[in-house]
Image: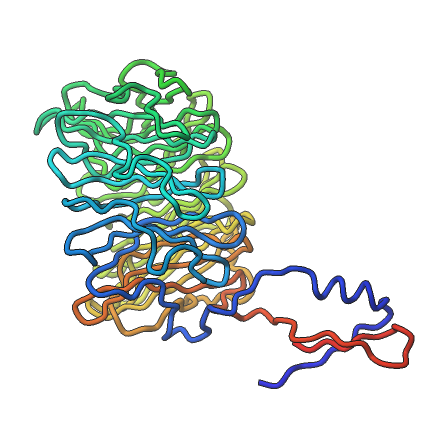
Length: 493
């Protein structure tokens, strides 16, 4: 490709050079071909990504389950903005016990590294954690720190969030008996010490089923936890706020801020609202259908509840949630109203619980089309008040990954297509879709790519204008134009 030339006029030479040669992010590794994503881990057997967080300087951390040794182990890697691996080739081993270690999730430790939580499959199932410094070196005991010593299984899924002080908070469901699951929580210090007792603190233990705990930081060392609870006839959403010492802020057993008609609840996800409260999104079964519903519990314990699409006779499942800087929320889900193969719909709810202008009352069609699957949406804030949603699209066997970016008014910024922008067009079934923001309005996306009977981990970058790979121009050279007394420079890019 030829270099293009530009003239910078009426600018002193030194100032022009300083501007053009200033440090900038490099994205040279990201391919521009949607059929050729960037390989991250390409070992034999199965590798499936499970969690990712931005590193704050344009790159990201990734965790995955890895079957290279014959059972599932936990691995992690740090990638820079160009997609280059910064730690050991093919990742650093976080947990490699004799049993399976599954579902690893990372959070930032505030010092350039991460803390990873996972479930160890040796009976009883137990939560463990390990801290990796900025160089990827384990900081706690070699096998990891057991989060809480309990006799029975600690059930997946669990939740993990930063405590804001270099440590980490966990919440999980404990199998007291087959018919009695309880919610517990724990805080680990930056050194891995258990701050809320050897067994953690009991959050909800009514003798019924308390499940699907979703915990988020309160920004002050404590955490909010939402869970589903069938203490009454049907499942309801309950909430509790734990302070930095692990004490209940509200009544023992939690508060029930749900204002919806009673019905079974599934697929609960949650996020911190950025102001000391928590937002939960879930599917609520009303009569014979699951409908999408949102609950916002504010820092003072008051709440607002919103039925996203209450007048649709269809199942609304697979919730995806992204919080905006004002405390509002983007919500996306799969919907069967027009096609039993599922479409993707979305909406935006304000900090006060109302649907934002521009979004239809029963949701905006994000990805639709008869006889085609659009499902498994994932979403993240773009850091600029909007959100990017990505989903899997195709038939029962062959899928591609597609994305859209929305502002809070439902308007797509320039560069984004009404049909979505392809992240990958590979004719394969993609699994384990994990998004993380780039820090410049775009998104890194990783997924497991089938290669024969094995799975590799690959990734792609999509920028704020919906362009994949490396669309940004890069300076090739800056040269002085001779004999003009510093009036002009010649720039090639």
